[in-house]
Image 1 (cartoon, rainbow, N blue to C red):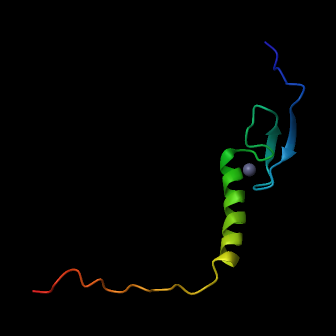
Image 2: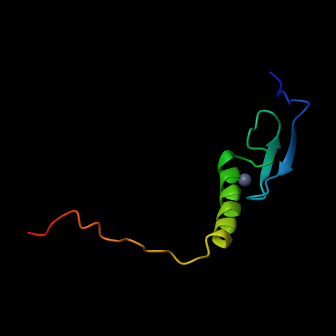
Image 3: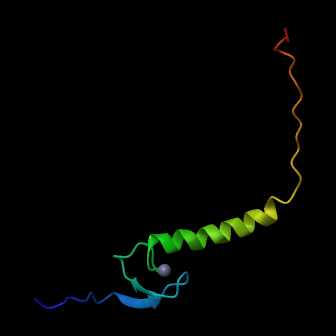
Length: 71
Ligand SMILES: [Zn+2]
């Protein structure tokens, strides 16, 4: 048996971990090497955005409803 190499597959560098990632339809996480690296990269991106977006003090506007009567 010979090792079959798909024609439309090539190796790229994973943007997350800089390792070899298979760039082919077989790899849904392309150009990342794995779905993990992909989620990590997206997560970092999102958290970066969130950090800027959520930059306001929390409003602790909890007014007691007074529904429960102390006994
Ligand atoms: Zn990777």
